[in-house]
Amino acid sequence: MRLGATVADYLCASDAEAHIEECRKHGYRAAPCPEVSIEEGDRIRDIKQAFDDADIVIAEVPAWVNPIDPDEHRRRANLQTIARQLALADELNAVCCPTVAGSYNESDDPDAHAGHHPGNFTPEAFDAVVEWVRAVLDQVKPKRTRLTLEICPWTMLDGPRVYLQLIEAIDRPGLAVHLDPANCVNDPRTYYGTTAMINDCFDLLGARILSCHAKDVRYTLDARTVGIEEVVPGRGVLDYRTFLRRIEQLSSETPLIIEHLAGKHEFDEAARYIKQVAREVDVSL
View 1 (tube, rainbow, N blue to C red):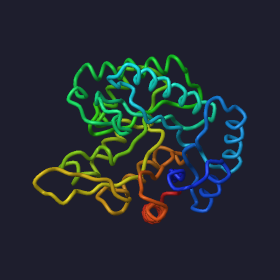
View 2: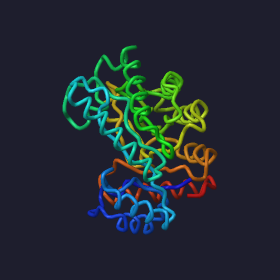
View 3: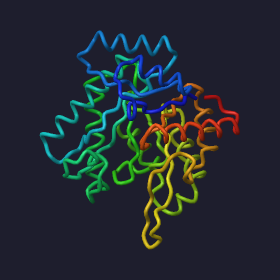
View 4: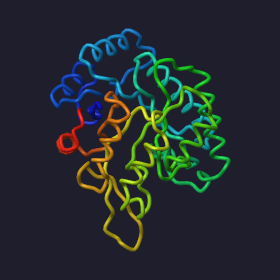
């Protein structure tokens, strides 16, 4: 597989060469695309060529917006954002364009796209997701990339079985799977059974999984309620030995992207841990 990181989270530069140099420094062979617009044709070609020459895969062109936002104006704008990002991913030959299924959360907070709302778990929410994904895929018709959805515990897409149901209902070749198993840990049984959960994800979704994110989880201190927080890989309970083995069984080219960390020091810690586990289980990065 190809280890990478969201280097833009701490790198004070947007040009492709700076991203590539950072990847080389840490042995990363995959990364999200530097920020660019679909209108910047020359820059798109330059970015693609630079990453190709460096043998670094553009793992994702993300679209973290809310496609079922209850506000009609924001929803329409968000769907166009996803369509534009998907078209950009196709131009760049990126592995995927990840986004979320969406939420009925009414806040305009940046995290509302995966926020809590009782309507998220209704049949109407399932139908709404099927409708918007079909519409975007029919509009863009990607040839080289795939639209992927992120499992999020407060949205309708909260596990691999729902993902499989969505794939079958949407019935479009442009949809694939982006897997972040840390987001599947949403109850104590799963918390203490991440090996089974990871195997379940790969058994159910199989070759549809095109890319993965690297995070970890641990419980919060209040034992009277269920609280689970993201942490640096290696500080939590996620079974990385099984996770890395199952990714490698899919393809040696599958990207695994470290994300959501506080700064470069945490990204470095995460990379060291993943590389150590990869050596232990004989997985090439």
